[in-house]
Image 1 (spheres, rainbow, N blue to C red):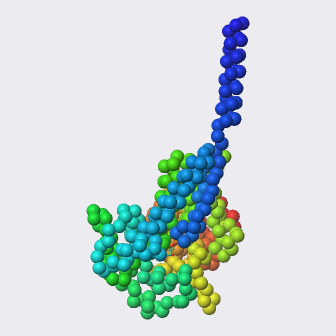
Image 2 (image 1 turned 45 degrees about the vertical axis):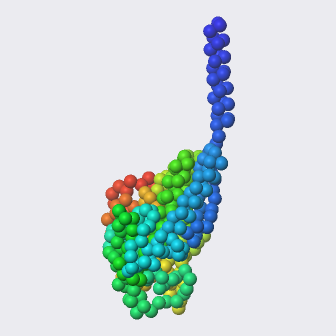
Image 3 (image 1 turned 135 degrees about the vertical axis):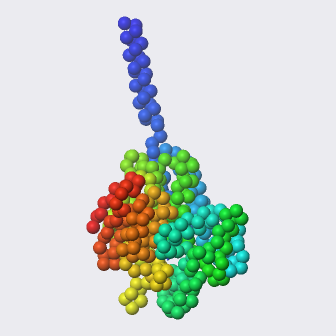
Length: 342
Ligand code: AMP
Ligand code: MG
């Protein structure tokens, strides 16, 4: 009898303990903030049971993106990349190892895409200057800079931590890969703060990890390239990245023709064939570089590049408006579900 009483008291205490701990266990919440960085809106969302910690993590992630911008932006005259470009044809420049890493990764994608994604496109990109002007450069002017676009003249010295551009007038431009770097690096910072899940969206480059507070995966919407309020696809993803390259973010229209910011190294004109290319990959550097590369290559060669890489998926809108879903055939290693909504 005495034993029974003690046992039931113990059960009661245990239940109360469970109830109390359930009640007081802090709940996961989502904290979302945005800042203007890299010339665009950066949105960071994190899942955490500690709001103060979440905000500290977000602050650190924003600082990380600012740090990368100060190294990789061609708009900042004192950045490492601007110093390299200013010394083209003159001498190697000592740079931060993150720039060495970014240029090396950039060159890997340049090789992989047969030069379609070309980090040495700076002089041609500057002639077009789509963000600030609506002047169409003469083909002669463009041809004059062609000899300055050879990526084999970008010389990295890893021991010395220097980059040298062999010809005067050469310019590296990491516009097609920099936001991916920002997404990946910012997520690494969040994880170092013990954050369990989050999203870093740097304009059209979105990196996610973990899950939402209710345990569900993240959903990334792909905008219609001709109607911003329309979503053409929903990507459900836990760990990975989605990047979109399009002819609708930075462009001008003259005599009914659209001129945009992604330049073909072959024609030196804005690349043709797509309205947008969205690539899903394990990391944002890959999705960023390959969405730009596939956009440059056009539908046929773009598909070949996707197959060659093997670990990415793509959702493209062709110039005709047709939506195309591409997969390389075999396993991609991505934990993703794609819903085409149109
Ligand atoms: P994204 O929005 O990631 O596709 O990148 C577009 C940006 O990449 C442009 O604004 C340029 O700074 C740069 N870019 C343009 N054409 C090329 C190219 N063929 N290869 C590499 N980067 C490019
Ligand atoms: Mg890109």
